Structure formats: C-alpha cells, structure tokens
Amino acid sequence: MSSHQLESTKEEKGNGGTLALMVASAAVGGTVQYGYNLAIMNAPTVYIQNFVNETFQERWGIQLEVYEVTLIWTFIVSIFSLGGLTGALVAGPMSIHFGRKKTLLLNNIFLMSSALLAITSRKARSFEMIIISRFLVGINAGVSMNVQPMYFGESAPKHLRGAVSLSSAVFTSFGLVVGQVVGLRELLGCESCWPYLLASNAVPGFVQLLTLPWFPESPRYLLIDRGDKDACLKALRQLRGSEVQRAELDEILQEQAEAEGRRAQQPWELFTDHSIRWQLISVTVLSSAMQLCGNDSIYFYASYIFQEAGISAEHTQYVTIGTGTCEFTACILCNLLIERQGRRLLLMGGYALMTGWAVVFTVALSFQNVVHWMPYLSLGCVFTYILSFGMGPAGVTGILPTEIFNQTARPAAYMIAGSLMWLNLFIIGMIFPFLVQGLGQYCFVPFGAVCLLTALYIGFFLPETKGKTLPAITNEFNKLNFHEQEATGKKKQAQYQLGEICHSTAL
Image (cartoon, rainbow, N blue to C red; front, side, top):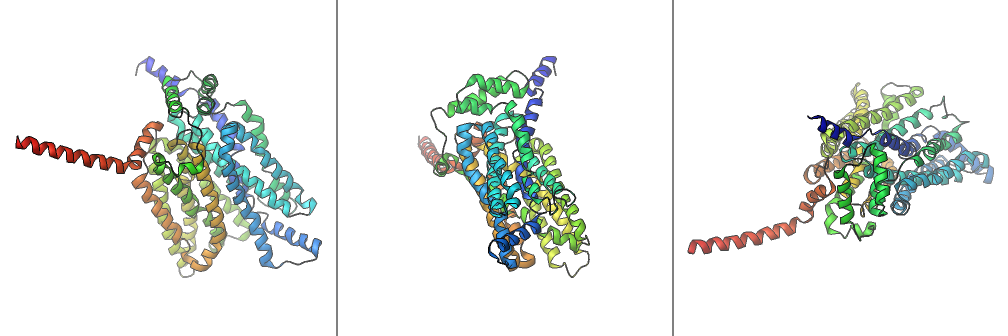
C-alpha cells in the first residue's frame, strides 16, 4: 500500500476519540438507566412490601392479605413497563422537534422528578409516590432506548455504525450489573437505604447533563431535518477528528435529496407504505421476539435454580451478579464481532442457540428431582441462555431501524419498535406466573418456539446490512417489497419473447 493510500485510510478513520466520548456520555444517562432500573428493584422487594402494609395500617387500620400486598408490588414493578411504552411513543415526536441530543438532555426531567419522589416517599409515608416514580423513570428509559441508538447510528461512520450502535446494548447490560452490585445488602440493598437505592439513578443523569452538551448533534439530523449544511460539516469534523470524507458527505446528501420535500412520517403511515413493508415486518418480528424469547423470564428461575444447586440464600445475591456479568460480557463480544461477522449471523445464531438451550432447560427442569446432577445442568442453562441472548439479539435488534429506514421514517419506526418491546415486556411480566402455573416444567417451550421461528425468519427474509449504504439496503428489501410486480413483469416479458421466437422460426 502506498504512503498516499495509508494517509487516506488514516484520514477516513480519524482518531475516533470524540465519538467514543460522545457514546459514553449519551449512554451513561441513556440505556444504562434501563438495565440499572430493572436490577435495583430486586433487593428492596420485602422492604417495600412491608412499607405498603404499614402505610395501609397507619391510614385506615387495615392489615393487608399477602395476595393484596403482592398485587400492589406487582403493579409497582409493572408500571415501569407502561412508563417505557409511553416514553417510546413520545420519543419520535421529541427527536424530530428537539433533535437527538437535546431530547436525551430533556429526558432527564423525568429522571430527576422520579428520583425526588423516590427519596421522599418514605418520609411522606406514601407508596403512591413510588408508583409515580417508577412510571416516570420508565418514560425516561423508553425515550433513551429509542433515541440513543438513533443518535449513535446517525453519528457513526459506515465502517463503525454497527459497533457504535451496539454499544447501547453494552451499556444496558453494564447498567444491569451496576444495579445488581449497588443493590447488595452491604451497600444500598438494606432496609434503611432502599429510598436512596431507588433514587440513585439520578447520579448517571447528572453525569450526562454535565458532559453531553459539549458534543455535537447528529450530523444527519442537522442536514436532512434542519437543512444546515455548515452545522453538519462542523459536527462531522468534530466527531471524526479529521476533514470530512467526500464519500460520507455524498451519502448523506443523497439521503437528503431522496427526503426532499417529504415530512417525517407518522407510525400509522408506515403500515400503508408498500415500499417499506418488509422493513416494517422485520422490525416488528425482531422487536417482539426480544421480549417473547424468555430471556427476562429466565431470571425468574435464577434464585430457585441456584438454591437447588446447593447455593445458600445468603450467597444467591452474589451469584445473581454473575448473570448480569454474563450478559455484559456477551454484549462486549458481540460488539467486537458485529463488523466482522455481520448482523444476520449474530441474530440467527443467537436465536438458534437459545432454541437449543430452551430444549435442554426443559429437560433439566423435568428431571430436576430425579437425577441428582440435573440442578447443575439447569444452572448452566441459565448462563448459556443469557450468553446466547447477549451475543446477538440483545444488541443487534436495536440498531436495525437506523440501518433499514430513511430519515423521514426512522423516528416512527423506532416508536413502533419501542412500543412493541415495552408492550411485550408488560405482557410477559403479567402472564409468566400463570404460564409457570399452567405448564410447569414446560413453561419454556413457547419461548423456544418463538426463538426457532425468529431464527427461520432471519434466515429467509432479513438481508445483511453490514457495511452497506441505505440505498443498497433498500434495494435488497425492494426484492421482497415489489416481488409480485417483478414476477408479473418477467412473466409478460417471457410471453413477449416466446412470441418473437415463434415468429422468427416461422420466417
């Protein structure tokens, strides 16, 4: 390679330092919150249930039954999902009106309000404040889960787009681990500290508020939505650490030309747009499978399985941290592989492995009390299932709307994907106990079926997007979107050619 080519390659890649710092700043107050707020609710379960019971006794002199306390506790936990659904619905309009970066900053209003309610709830003797707090932090998580991957995908160069977007999943699993650690009894998971545990999510929010304003807005948003070419070039120079490459600018200008005169689409308009039918089907299938695959449900069995394997109740909390660490490690590995192996292989491989582990897990649960070493097999299944999920579905699913939709449809696509994810999370959270009661040791059979069907869909219908421009990806999907028209056109052409051949032969 000549010195000129080496210099050109170096310029193309830039130093990447600003982009890496921007990713860390946005994520620490973004998708970190999703994982963190899921994890911190495990430790104070008994303490909050006692607080609810005490509140009822103080107000009305009523001693709640166990099922009534459990019902209120279930609502406190589930309201987080409904808040996330609300956040997913408002994320699209907010990202269009305020921009990607400013939406993430404004999103901290929900977070800080939630932390204030949580930390004062015990002093005010109000469990209702905890419910409102969880709803508000759910909105915060719903907005971040939609806007942050969009912000990353639009800011990263093509050769780093997958890895940068996938970092959202890495930070989500990192938040999960941090939440599990902070929730230890030795830290904030004790009875006297649970309000501080619920309010501790404000710390990452403060970090984001102090750091993110120093970084630029999404270059694509600045040029395509705002029409500000100078601001776009300035943002690209800052993020790349070098002069803007002509090829990258041409790609953004081409997307701007295609979106010229078109307003941002609404979610319901995507359902009637034939040109993006298979893109929408793909996002719908994969976003739903994220929650219907049973990864979150396997945590339900974790404590039981650990105890059956001989781990004492006192040490279970430490082993549980291993599950979060397992997903975190898998997401990092996926981040390193995504630009080498591509999206399809990681997605399809992840779901195929989860199908296999669901079968093994079902067998292990069936013989749990018959074969003495089966609890250890179940223990292994917990970690391998989570590992397989982190290796592909956990990270790759979130970046697809950025890669397969154009600028006008992207916010609406994220609204649909986010809404489906949160809605399915809420549904699984509500029906899983009944699923366990009705199916017993076979409760993971439906999850295995979902994983198998999703792997088959990816194999047959989802094109590879690694290293491709949006027009190239769109052309791949157009083979599916306009398959009938192409087939009809080819049939007419064949009939016409046959007529010509007969005519020539006669002559």
